[in-house]
Amino acid sequence: MSGIRSPDDDLRKVGQEPDYRFTLANERTFLAYIRTALAFFAAGTAILSFFDRIIDQRALVVVIGAGLYALGLFTAASCYWRWRRLEGAIRRGEPLPFSLVPPILTGSLVLLAIVAFVGAVIR
Image (cartoon, rainbow, N blue to C red):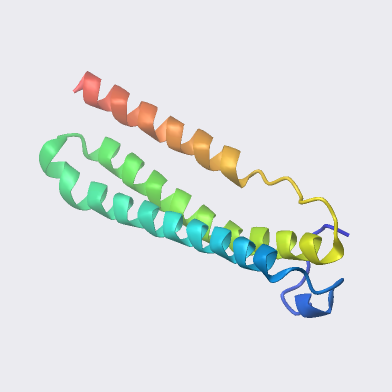
């Protein structure tokens, strides 16, 4: 069973207690996702707060800033479920499930960078 479980399910009762190093590595990955989400929020705030003075295209600034906020929200919302799925797989001795989060983040960030570049060149 590798589907998403209810938050009420106690992972400590699933499978066997794993080597603590794997659990701590999974937790470090979770915290890295949280830091990434905070970085997206900070970048979105910086774009929305300061780039109006540099780029005279409000629509472009809003699209890039809102896109960064959306990436931060997606990252923060998905990292708990990712941690949970991995922790369950580790405890059950199963292969780690594939995650679409990294390719979605990469593709979205590349798209925002292209929009920003095109907007800066057109300006």
